[in-house]
Image (cartoon, rainbow, N blue to C red; front, side, top):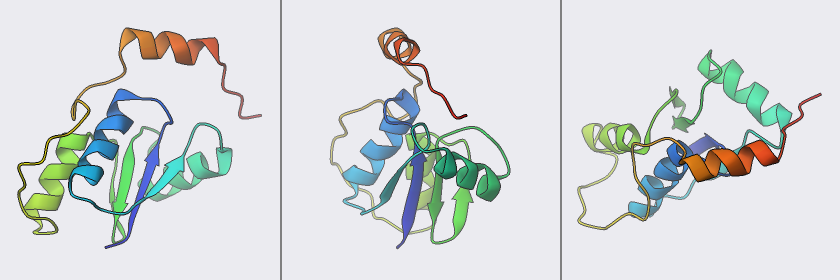
Length: 111
């Protein structure tokens, strides 16, 4: 299975996606859309929308998706088997107030 995850370095939603992929021991390309403009542009082009996270699984784009939704997709399509493994992040939550403050302190410049 080939997985490309278009993620922010620090984000509740992105951390949820990472947690699910780690839970099932799935190798994936963790693609930084914040610090690399070309990665963000690729995500928008492939997903036809600007919101993240986006996860591409064997050519199928799951746009603006939570870790919980990624897990549901993987299970529903028999790409993984249920497991009792625990995760180290909330699978369906945005950034905390502290994470937002940390990101605001470091402006992102694409131009």
